[in-house]
Length: 130
Image (cartoon, rainbow, N blue to C red; front, side):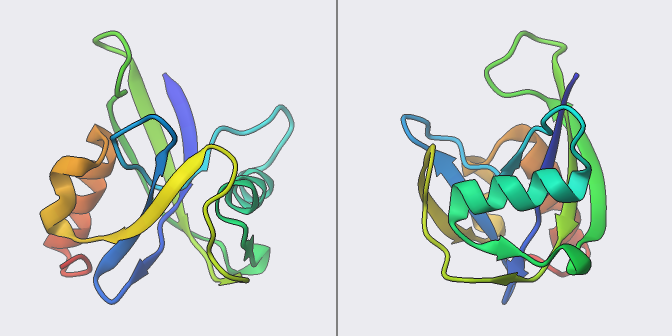
């Protein structure tokens, strides 16, 4: 089991997604917790590192937990993605291992990881993702 946290940021029916350098599969920004970190601490750190913005810790709100086959891993290796919504300050800019970010709609479902496909399906079914 790979345990990750992610920022689920939806604006005008589109989800903020990122792609790492040398990769082609898009995912939600976030990552793994460092030892001893809370979800809030880890997500604030990861988003600052990846997208150069500051999440407002007080605004973090649980958005859901999804599990699927981990991309690029042996069959049966699952990724659990715990997602949070949050407001931020600053200007979005790709940093660290992030090559680019974009706003994806449901039509982009085939470009994202398996676990993010489940998130897209859920958001689309609820009328949040267009």
